[in-house]
Structures are given as structure tokens and as C-alpha cells.
Length: 438
Image (cartoon, rainbow, N blue to C red; front, side):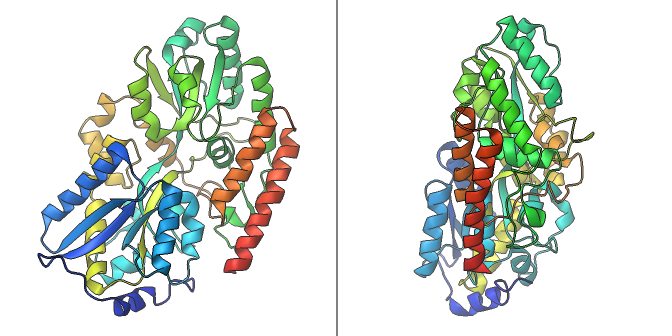
């Protein structure tokens, strides 16, 4: 057991007093980063749990974007005012794991609280991101997504293309046909370039993103993206940009409008973007396809890896609060709640039971494309290269990579030189994290 876990729950139980509402129910503060309609849905989930019993009141509170929520929770913990539950994005996982004495691992919480949790009930490709070396859950997966390909069917029909290729090699030929036919100005674009074109390209093709099992093996991990076929892939995209098969559309979700307007025939984006694509694709038919793989590297693609966030339990609370958190997590992971959250938000269900419930309800038949991400995640057993990433300072590392990708796609540097610079600066961030937490 990593040293940060030892005794955290026991110390937390002893350190804090009982929190009671005016009605005698124990209050449980839940800080999250879900704004808009997703925030309203979070409120609904909490309200339904509160109405299902009389002992606990979960109080959700929107705290800004992921970065703001994480920073705020760390500051609140230091001030002794932390919530019991906080939503942390996946790239903050290593930071939370190494927050000595600040967290209560979920497996420990559930065991101490007498809640029966079967790790086998959860989707391995989802929970694998949030487990320790022994497969024990550290945080509760909540909103997980993975990249897929959104396709403008009208453009493909105009170009005389029947099927979406499953490999990058076939995709190159198809995108060339689309652009040459004049059906679209741009073949494809991508959101979240580092996440999709490097982190997921590596996982899908069973390549290491970093040493030490992508960081799961220890703090000595260092980036390896300048020493694998990822270099060739990024150079391929840079070359495609010269003839219109690819168009760099910026960081985050900045590229999505190029697909919505019909300028680009395909968009690589999060599975959780399905609702947004559906809302914006009013003038054309679209479909959803799996992320392609490189047939020069693998015969069968690996699973893609997740983005999104999970729920972490912070130390320093009472027995009653932890009992309530465990009850809430048990409720949250039920097939009914997960299926409803998944079908509303587009995020992945975290359990097989929630997926099967959706099948029984006819959800996937009524909503074509909504099962592609799940099938992509569950079709194979994750390897060390496709389990996920566990790297310290990962938010800052992503910024460095995005900066270098922009230089590559602007034609300022080659893919090799740009990724080597990203590795040099990224490894300096990893060394700093190791020194602070080793």
C-alpha cells in the first residue's frame, strides 16, 4: 500500500466532528466542474439520492472548470475546509495519488463502510485508469469518455465513398478522394490533439507513451513519444495538411465548428461530444466510427483510453460523512443511475450492468453511434500501453505537447524535432514531480 494511504481513513475519522443538518441528516459536500445542463443533471442525481433515504444530504457545488476545481480543493484542504467529495480530471490522477494524507482511497472507504463492491462489475478500461498497482480503486469513475470519429455522411456520398476506413492507411486514401472530388475543402480535423493524436494513438497501436508502464510503474517514468511510431503519425498529419486531407483546428474543442459547417468531412472528438454533434448537424446526416489504427503497427487495435474525471474522497471527515459517501457511491454506481447518466450525457457507463440495461431499454438501437465508444473500449483486454497514463504534472505536460504540435503543424519544425523538444521539457516536469513526491 502506498504510504499516502496508510491510516488516512482512520485519522480522518478521528480528526473531524459530526456534521448534521437542521433535520439531523449528515451533510456531504460534493465539489464538481459540471456547468450548464450537466450541472443540472448532477443536481438531479444528488436530489434523487437525498430523496431515497433520510440519513444523508449530498450537496453538489459547481466550482469552475477542472483546473479551477482541483486548485480550489487543494487550497480548501490546506485551510481545513475541504469537501468530502471532489471531481478531478483524469490528468490530475497522479497528483491526487501523491497528495500525502489528503485522500481516502475508494476501496478503503467502501471496505471500512461495509459496502460490497465487486471490481469485476466495472469496465476494466475505465476503472484501470483509477486503480493502484494491485487493481484497487482509488477514486470513483464518474464522467469518462474516449475519442471516436464523427463522419458527415452527405460528404462521403457526394465523394462516392461507401464505408469509413478502419485504418490510418485506408483513411489517407479516402480523405484524398473526398478532397480531390471537391465534396469538402478539408478531409478531417481533430479536437484535443495531444489526447487523441498522441495519447490515444499510442494506446490504440500498443505503443508506450512513457516508460514505467506509462507511469503506473513508478515516478521514474519519462516520455517516449519521440522514440516510437508516434513521430511518423504526427509527420503524416503534417504532410496531410499540405494537401487538405488534414486541417489543424486548435486546442481543446476549437476544431468542432469546421465539422459542423461542413468544411471538414470528419472530426475526431470525444464520445461525450455526441449530443453537441447531434445538435449542430442539422443540415446533414452523420455517423460515428471507431478511432482508426495503424495497420503497419498492429493487426488488431487495442482499446482507446479515457478522458473525463473521477470522484475523489478527501481525508479529515467523520465516520458519519464517510458512511454517507460510501452509500452515495453505491447509489451512483447502480445500473439505473449509471444508465441514465450515460444516456443523458454521452459519457461512458462505468459498469457492464449499466451498458446491458441500455441494451435492454433499446437505447443503442434508438441512438445509432452511441455504442461505438463502449465497443471500442471493451473489445480487448487493456495492455500496459493502453491502460492509461499515470504521470505527474500531466496538465502542464499536455500544454508543452500542444505547443510543439502547433509548431509542427505550422511547418516551423519537423515532427521529430517538435516531439523531441516536448519530451525534453516534459521530462523536466516529470523530474520535478518525482523530486517533490519521491
